[in-house]
Length: 308
Image 1: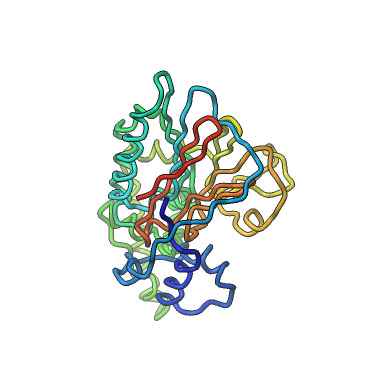
Image 2: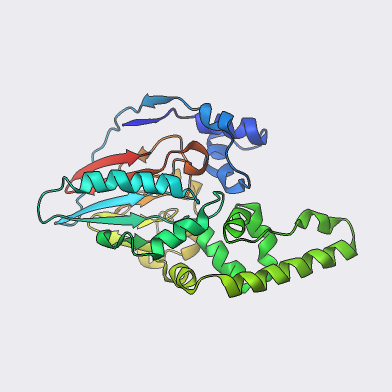
């Protein structure tokens, strides 16, 4: 498997968005949540591919008998990459032993940042993947859309981390909220524009899309694996985990050494390469920027990876 050299993602982000007060590693983990524009060719070209070193692992995990699981990382409106990855899964699943059922588990963050968010949701709701009995998990970006549907004033905040691209994909242009800082009159105009957009978006959002967003699960357990968007808080049982942590947690989960009852398979935090150790498998490889959408293939005790 070919993966991105560790650190290149952080370098490209700093070159594009400036220096950050936090460490390079923390910047690499967090800054993609600030994206509002499409990737530039020079950003994508900055990456070189090198083989990753094999991890030193002691834990043996087992997928459910008779199932081959494919867990897919953050898509973020990249329908083009999703279709390419599904083609790879199709080819792999065709080689499975007779009687083995393939299943795809999507880890959330289907929308925002990329310009094909509506297409991704339409694809998911069309039944095109029914042969894989797909499991769809809730990501923090889907949570943001659901919050916007309830709170018109959340629109400005949502567009700061990618919601504008989702609105564009549904045919709406977000108001220029920066203008609201200039005068009371402009503030009133922006508020009115947001209210009109909010009402129209709620009215025109397809019912099938709304039902999809409302049906998303916070986590999924299969065999020795627990699938969740962001991670879990160390030291707490599954029953005591909060949904906010499942959607938003970063360093407290990533940097801890406490083991969990299950091996955690997650996205949310972009990394230069697929991460695997005895606690977690991280599958967010910054597809929006890098063009690398990644998946884990879990069959028996075997773990393998696919990416675009």
